[in-house]
Image 1 (tube, protein in one colour):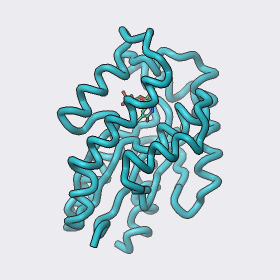
Image 2 (cartoon, helix red, strand yellow):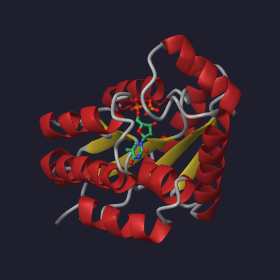
Image 3 (cartoon, protein in one colour):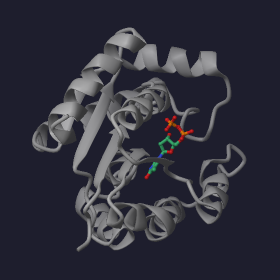
Length: 209
Ligand code: TYD
């Protein structure tokens, strides 16, 4: 029987602290005796990491938008076949730093490719897999960009202006509010430990821990 495991995704704009929170959640779940795997998109497998390099490189300003859309999907198709679906099939908890909803927000809603079209591609890439729980780490744009700056290094998306990031934030909030059963919105402007407490409350409630 497929999907015995549990898929939890983290979504949010730049500097929302997804990677920090995912590591903390992984440690807590492991302590609770769960078998956990942490993955990120785009990337997470040797092939997907090569695609990541192409799609995010600041050098590739000339990339066509359709190419960008399809490269994110290509990276996704690979990680689902190689790791996500096999892990779910053996009952693991899969924690993902971004997945299909990033394409819905960035390419579908903000850049205007269209939500429906992206969802059709997402269904192909993921073999119709939707996260069981999605945590939106919501943070005001000024705070997120400042954190990102402090961490150094800008990819093609981080080089966008503040209004782009504001549209990303609003698109995430709209999407999350339209599917409240799956999405939980966490205030990520709070100190890391407080965010951690909120994340754990949502996850432990959903998993019955
Ligand atoms: P990354 O360096 O992983 O940043 P973050 O810490 O914000 O996750 O860069 C991933 C970037 O790719 C991010 O700006 C969002 C973008 N992205 C899309 O536009 N579409 C997608 O489908 C995915 C997975 C990511």
